[in-house]
Each structure stands twice: as C-alpha cells, then as structure tokens.
Length: 215
Image (cartoon, rainbow, N blue to C red; front, side):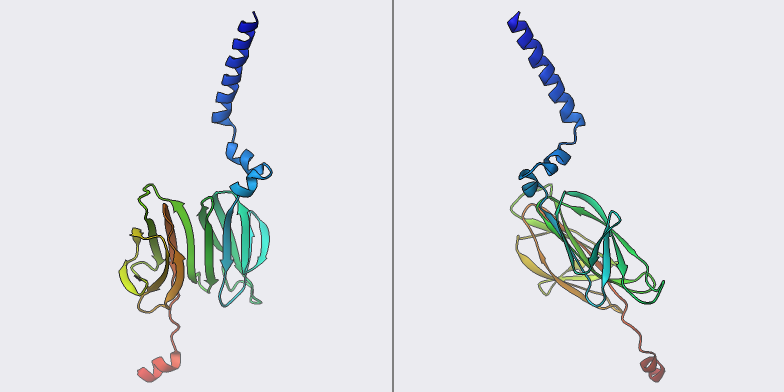
C-alpha cells in the first residue's frame, strides 16, 4: 500500500507540473521573484530628443521629459507615446512607437517630433538572430524609403537593408537622401543579434528668399 500511495502522489505531481508548464506564465513568475528579477528584467531603453523636449508615456504612465531612461523592463513588445512639449496647442501630433525589447539588451529612441506628422531621428533595438556564427546583423529601414546607408563612411546599400552581416563591434551609421537632412549615429553590432534600425529623415527647409532670388 505505501508503494501504491507513493506512485499515486508521483503521478499527480507529474500531472500538475505538466499542466503548469502549458498554462502558468513562468516568465511573469520569474520576473517577480526577488534576486532572480534583477537578472531577468535587465532590459533598458533610453529615449531622447535633440532640439525639443518630449514627454514619454508607457501604459498611460508618464516617465517625464526627455532624456528618459527606463530600466528593469521585462522582454516583450511595448508601445511608447511621445508628446512634444510646446506652448502651441495642436501644432504637433503625438507619436506612438512600437518596439520589441529583448532580454539583456539596450534600446534607443532618438526622435524629434516635427509638424505635419514629420519627425527626425532613429530607433535602435535588438532581436535574437536565428543564426549564430560569430557574427551580428544590421537591418535598416528609412522613411522615406530608398535612402542611402553608409557604415563607417563606406557605402552599404539603399534602404531597406535586411540582415547585413557584420563583425560584432561599434560602427558609425549615416543615412542620407537628396532633399533631406542627414542622420548619423553610432551603433553596436552584437554577436547572435540583429540590430533593427529605423530612421526618419526630415526635409531640408526651403529658404523662400533664396528661392525667389533664384527665379
């Protein structure tokens, strides 16, 4: 009888554990455990704007004015809202930015909100690469499309660029397109990751006086 009871207990325990594997969100549990959470929630995002301040919101919570750094985030997909701080009501539309945050990585949003739904800057975030061969990858998308991408001063390709293979190290990326202001920034390519880069280019302002003189 004792052996039978032990067997029944083991079977029930295995059954409960099996159910738990499929239905209990262990990611959430691990993220809440003391000490473990320090290593699990180690994703960071920094949000900046160069020439004008923006207020940063996540899940309707304000994190203050740029520059803002939010640490200890769980990996996953997030939507950030950026509201340009201005005295002119209705002059600028809010920006909603969807971004995937990978565990143990740092993401960057450097975006200046302009009028007429225009913006200038870049967004950087990592996703795991399905291939691990000692290399890292770089993917670049631009708005508008077909902008020219330079890496360390060398022509790379026209955007969009998908999974450009590179050695893990720091690089300088420059994006340019005729009629738009250049955007240049540093990046770090990491082994086993794809660095996703989204660049928004701002049109070069037209000088009305110069245009009139030219005519």
